[in-house]
Length: 414
Image 1 (cartoon, rainbow, N blue to C red):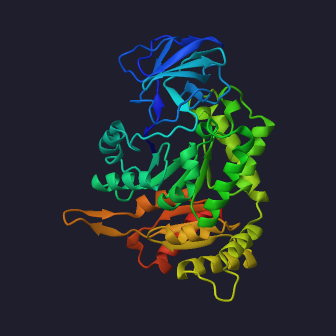
Image 2: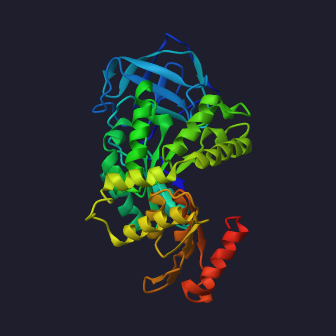
Image 3: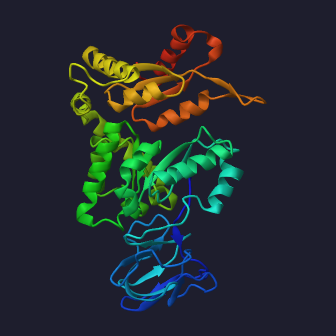
C-alpha cells in the first residue's frame, strides 16, 4: 500500500530545534511560505483561510505525524480572531514542544478544497508506485466520490489500472459522505487519529460502529487505525486498548492498521505479536452463523424471491454448506478475486483458501500476467488466504486443486 499526502496541511519552514509553546500564549497561523516557523508564527501549507470555515472559537490541532494525542509534542489551539484571509491568531491550550518528522495541522470541521492528489503524490506514483506495481493507493482525507474518481482517472492515465483505491475517512466531510466514498472506492479505512479531531469523544464510537456495519453489509473491506498507542513507549497495551482490538474483530473489521506503534515505537515486534494474539482470540469468539443470518436478513435473501446475483447466491450457499458440514476450509477458484470477496462478506468460520488462476492480457505490445497481483489484493478480505495457481499444472479441478490442498496442509489448515 502506498499512502498519499493529498490535501493534508503541514507546518512549513521549521527550525532544527523543537518549537516550545506555553499554555495561554498566542500564536499566529499564517498562509505564508516565506515566514519561518517559531513560537509566535506557524506557516501552514494552505493558500488561504478564506472558505475554510475557520472562525473564533474553532479548534485547531498541531501535532507530529502519526500523533497519539497523549504526547507532549502536540498543541491544542483555539482561534481567538481572524486577522485576514491568510492569518489567524490562536490561543495555546497546553504547554508542549512541537517536534517530529512532520507537523500536521487539523482545523476542526474545515472544508478543504485542495486536490486529492498533490503534485508530489502524482510524481511519487509515477516514479515509485508504477515501477513497483503498488497494489493499493490510500487517499488521505478523502472527502467524496469525486476524489476517488479523480484518483482513478490519474492512475489509469499512467498505466496503473489494476491498482486499487483505499478511501481514508478521517474528517467530517468524509464522514458525512461515507456512503458515496464506500461505493466508489475498493477499500475503506477509518483513520481514528485524524477523525478524533473532528468528532466529539462521546460520539466517536457511533461513527466507528456505523462505518463498520455499513461496510460489512455492502461487502466492502474496512480497516481501522490507532489501537495500541500505549505501546509506543510500553511493552504492553492497556486493558482498554486490548478490549478495543477485540471489539474491532467482533464488530466486523477486516483488518487493523498500526501507525505510531511501529513507525516510531520502542516495541514494534511486540506490538504486532500482541495485536495478532488478541485478534486470533477474538476470532475464536466470533459468532459466524449469527453474522451470516444478520446479513442475509438485511439483504432480504431469506425471502421466497430474493434479488440476488448468481455469484453471491453460490457464495451464500457455500458458506451455509461449510457451516452445516463443519468443513475445515472453503476452497475458491477465482480470476479477479470477486468470488472470494462474496464469500468473505459472510464471514465463515472456515479459512477461505483462494486459488487465483492467472490471466494473460495484452496492450498490443506486451503480455501481462495478473495472477500474483490479484492474489496479493485478495489479502484485503477478512479470512482469505490467497495462493497463485501454476497454469502449467492444467485444469483447476486437477493438479491445481491438489497443489492448493497441499499448500493448505503446509499452512496447518487441514
